Image 1 (cartoon, rainbow, N blue to C red):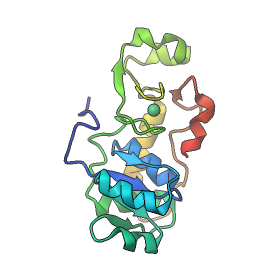
Image 2 (image 1 turned 90 degrees about the vertical axis):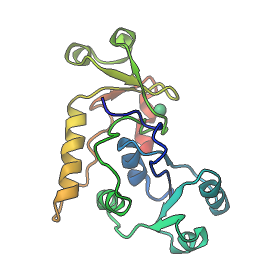
Image 3 (image 1 turned 60 degrees about the vertical axis):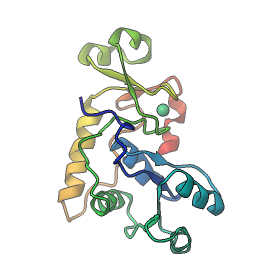
Length: 189
Ligand SMILES: [Zn+2]
């Protein structure tokens, strides 16, 4: 599959304002290293310098404080337009690292043998899928089922359609990812 997330040093790394959770989740789905945590403004400013990250925010004051080249003011208010905006602004590759990073905790996922995920995914998934990945941090199992295709289709539409598109984020609870901690999954949306 595509190159492993986290190994490409030329990738921009982000810190996303806590108000922009869906943008953060999508950047992780696209495979980009994205910090999304409750932080004070002071900690935000420290983290972006220490970790060489770009702040994405709709807080003009915070963007100004971060300084030239360290922050980007997100113009769009609708989350999915924000995703398209950031992809364009930073010339991100929306395909190359797709689904290589855990959308819940940002860690690059690792390929895992099918025979080691048996108890953790539904039987129909085991029957229909051969390839699985596991997040080494939170244990989430990923595979490329219908949610994967829907996410790709949505992304294509978001990047090509100037009109209204659905505000739903395709990947989500119960439609293609499984976890022993499934009750926490909705936190990232
Ligand atoms: Zn994870």
